[in-house]
Length: 358
Image (cartoon, rainbow, N blue to C red; front, side, top):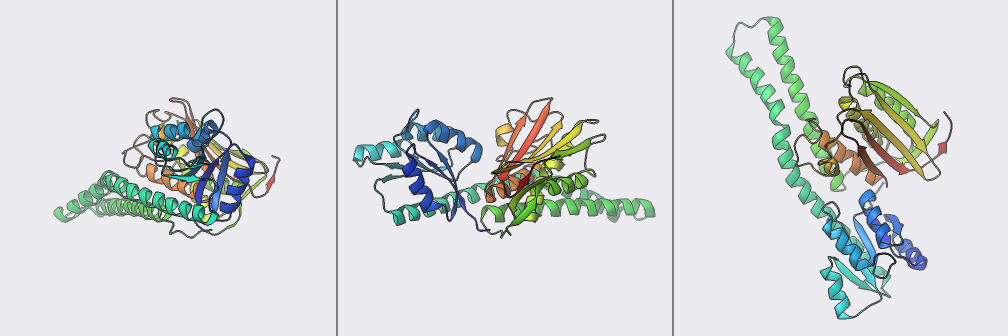
């Protein structure tokens, strides 16, 4: 599976949508919108890398839409190319003033537009990698402190106390091994996220049974679940997508483990797998403290914020990896949370084969 850019095409003319989709569909993942308002809603939920934005649209024109995107801190990093039939200098200036990265006039040369799309997708990727590098250095400063302290503390006791009982010595050596393993897992996540963002991770493409992934994830999560947390798995008898089994398993496991670690004692974690002709979903719900509303928009992005979800080491990395893998498969992960109530993470992927039934 090749790395593909996520492009949102916003135009109220079906002919233009068809033309642009035909130019880009072979190498990129596309969504379309027929109004500026719909474009903003899709940008917020789907997180495209690039928006091709027509100027003349109902409800909200392209200029206003672009300004709204630039005002939103979660969307302002998206690249925007305005496409217009207006070739006047004043219109071009207006486009750049509203925050567009480029201004293309109709009729455009298809090869030139394809080249511009590649350039801005490459630029978006480079900017993301630079931002990720800064955030990871900050996160590593927080996340490595505890395992390093565990290693150093146990090693100092072993060196300074010569007459330790065998049992105590084994406990200290076990603490060193556990802390080292924790540090190794953290560094492996850093490596994986960095390589995913850089497009260096090759992915297979085959049929994947999401219900089977969910069941395996639940089996693995029992070992880390809070005391008394139970699991319920339900949904369609067969829901398939196409993608890399190993990486999609990591996504589902991350969501289930997250729910298991943060569910209140005696409450269930519900894992529901469902599908339609074009979408496959895995929804994971737990009951607990919930996510602080202040951090909810940053759950997948705020790698520089320590202890994003109630002091869970490495969780921000795990969720960032999960969302990146989902996006590589043309999907999304969304989260809804009520403080003191339910929290639901929903993975949405293009459907492969779906058979309904319990």
